[in-house]
Image (cartoon, rainbow, N blue to C red; front, side):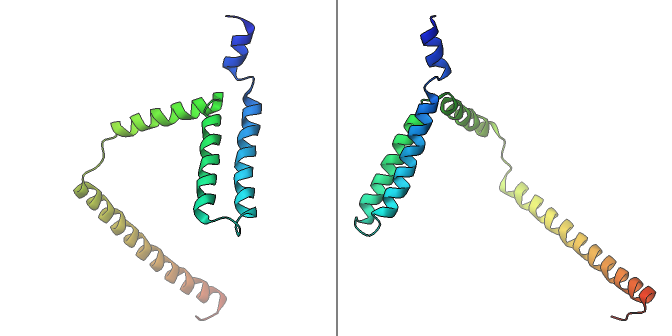
Length: 127
């Protein structure tokens, strides 16, 4: 393997590609703003989507872009491996959380009432 292939695989053109991606996205935003009154919404949406699509295609050709695509693929595979709870399990868990939250709210409300009376007694201020 020669030095040129190694440089291309490591992404020596990545900064140029990222500048091009940022330029395309900025052009989409600015163009949409400038031509907001003159061109129909449909044409502007198609133009913005085309610019974003081209920018995404260029971004996936960089080292970080390839890493992001691989991460997304691996994440999708991991989500398929998850054992999701049944509807009954999810409902029961939700009810337990609601009951525990209500209980703690009542405990804190009671402690607050007691502390207000204690502080009022100590300071002589009646509430």
